[in-house]
Amino acid sequence: MELKKHTGGTKMNYKWPLMKNNVTLGDRYNLAKFVLTSDRFTNGRKVRSFEKEWSEWLGCKHSLFVSSGSTANYLLLASVKEYYGLKDGDKVLVPADTWVTNIGPVIQLGFTPIFCDINLDNFSFCEEDLQYIAKEHPDIKLIFTTHLIGFPANNSKYSELFPNALIIDDVCESHGCKNADGSKVGSDSIGATFSFYFGHHMSTIEGGIVSTNNYELYDLMRIKRSHGLARESEMFDRYKEMYPDISKQFLFVTDGYNFRNDELSAVLGLSQLNRLDSYIEKRNKNYSMFISLMEKYPNLFYVPKYHEGVSNFCFPIICKDVRYAHRLRKVFDQNGIEHRPIIGGNLLKQPFLKDYSITTSKKELNVDLVHYNGIYLGNNHFIGEQEINLLSDILSLL
Image 1 (spheres, one colour):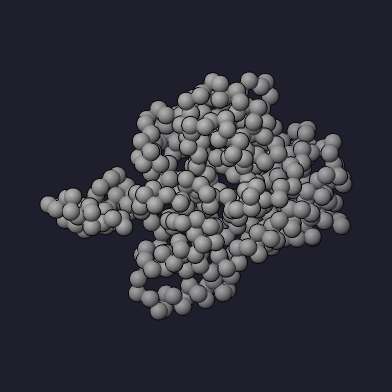
Image 2 (tube, rainbow, N blue to C red):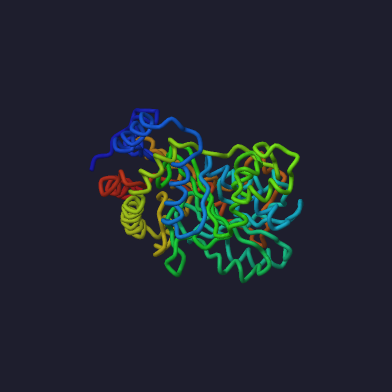
């Protein structure tokens, strides 16, 4: 295959973009039909239907549709803090490579983040450093696990090292990835968050969801999602009896936010959820071809193992030499292949986290290797053998 220089400079003309528009004509028809036949567009019946169907798909008891994966993170953390009686200053274990709105809420809610290096197998916590952190910070109260780019993390191992810590899950990029027992990640969690942003496994354009099996935590999140209003609670009658002198429709029983989503987004979610399993299957088929290709170059790249429970989000390329990373980025640009860092890279290099550091006993960090030598290429149901062959041609020239 002849490699050609790409002259475009916008997302619209990438030969291989990170993602394409995922809203089908069928989705648009469903939206148009709903708009023409309904007179309610705020949080209502369709939102509840989507929450129910998502819970059934995931295998959990309760879910709440919210405005984004980021607000799902904040809502879950705030509710866990209140429900379990966690305090300002309590330590929360987080990975050094995750998305910024996993770390922001930890700080905004008064917790102390304890940053851990990642491993190069599934991009979750580095177990060597976890053992070191368990000695340095045995009083960690909460672990916020990120199941990064489709790889299931090993929460059972984290529970062994921190038996007194609660664990919650960010599954925003990993819809349908599976635990060792075959259950979907997030189905058995205290709380798990998911994103339905444009570039994810399925899309409601903007949107996210938080899932749990704890009814009381779920009810608290319902209240917090909508300003702290008691009327959102399934225990509304009890609250009315407790505060008879306050207008029942405007009774605020805790602090809250407006993190609700709307009926149109739920219609789109219901439509896309029907295709989610097929999208995951196609992503994983592509990822299997990608791994087979990368394994041909063990001297050039760190190649993550193929995990049975993966629900792949992207193709992670981690060069052993930073010079290859620079060269690849240039060749990708010339050939119209959109690329980006692997999620946030080392977030401790970001200005807003300049006062924090990674707790480690190592001199060299895996997250720095990912930060400087890592490249993320898009994987989704729109690509296939043609893109893998293009990548193969490029790698053969290194």
